[in-house]
Length: 197
Image (cartoon, rainbow, N blue to C red):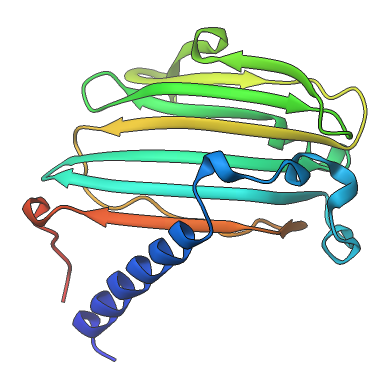
C-alpha cells in the first residue's frame, strides 16, 4: 500500500470513528454508571491499574495552522500504581497555543462528587529545557488520592495557532483497560491538508 492510499484510508477511518462516536451519544449523555466503580466489568479490572470508562478526543482543524483539541476523559483509578491518572500537565506557548478551558472532577467509589477543580486552580509555571529558560509553559494540577477506587473526569480544550502536524491519539496505556474510547477528526476544506507521499 503506498502512502497516498494509506492517508486516504486514515481519513476515511477517522470519519467513520467520528460517525460511530456521534451515534453513541454526546458527552451530556454519559451514563451515570460510568462514574461508579462497581459497574466496571470484572474482565476489565483483571491485570489493570486503571480503567478508561469514557474518552472522547475531538480534533478540529479550522484552517492552515489552526486547530482546536477538545478532550473529555473519565478514568477510574483502581490502585496506587495509576496515581498519575489523577493529575495532568498541559504544555502551552503564549505565541502558539493556549488552554482555553479546563475542569477536573473527582468521584468516590459510589460515583458521588468529592472535589472539583477549574483552570484557575492549576499551577502555571515555566518549562526549563536543559537549563535554558524558554517561552514554553505548563498548567499543572493533581489530586492526592486517599482511598481506592476513585474516578477522575477531565474536560479541557486547547487552541492551536501554529499547527504543524496532527496530534497523536493513544488508545490505551500499559496495565490499563478501556471501556469506551472515541476519536473524532474534522478538517475544514480550507485547511489545506498536506501529507508526504
